[in-house]
Length: 307
Image: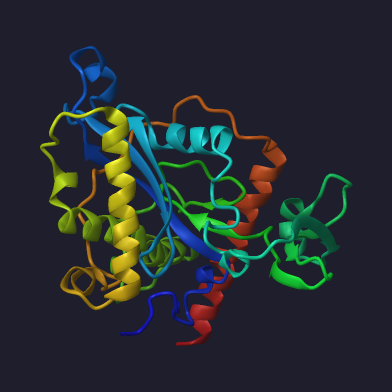
């Protein structure tokens, strides 16, 4: 089986994409007094689950328990504001030091970056740098180094705001699901959206495997304390990862491995709730959008050269 983490050469968007993020709804059983808050737009009660997965269909972050009425963007805001375990870097990437006793810290190394990306790499001293995470033992030997964080991003859909660290598709275009628009000339934005969808749908396929394997997650959910329901979701995601590592070719994974597979989802979402960006200035957002424009233009030019 070819690892899905190996992105095709023509998908330049994959170079700095460390995963894909999306929300999904899991049926919930809640007391009558709380049913309104958990009622989603389909009129049923559910949890709104935020999840991040890598390109090999493994979950690297799961945030469960938000009410079904909550907008995806609000769930992300809560994860960023209230939960320090949001994967920067992803959980599990420091397994080298599981049994080591050492020290960990970050340091900045000067960086030379294109003008369009300078805002993202600008530190609090006003210069451009990489933020390096390192772990060393007591003999001054490095046992883990994670470099080059700024400029990386998660692929997200249009339910999330475009801001540093979260790369969304362009708005206002035609349907941009993977496989659409092939066999005809695509403009830079449409091509970008098509390739963005080809990579981002790994999270939808991961949800598909999860819900097909664990019928409990499709409902109806037997009544239990909400914390128990939250724990069940997280446990199922952990078992999903274990099976991906130990049985990567089982029937569920094989069925959803096709990158162009169309996966049923909950459909579109409503307008953004009134959420202020997290310590992100309008200038930073515009710089991030300019980087996306430059990426789309470069991708389109490379595609034309390959013809």
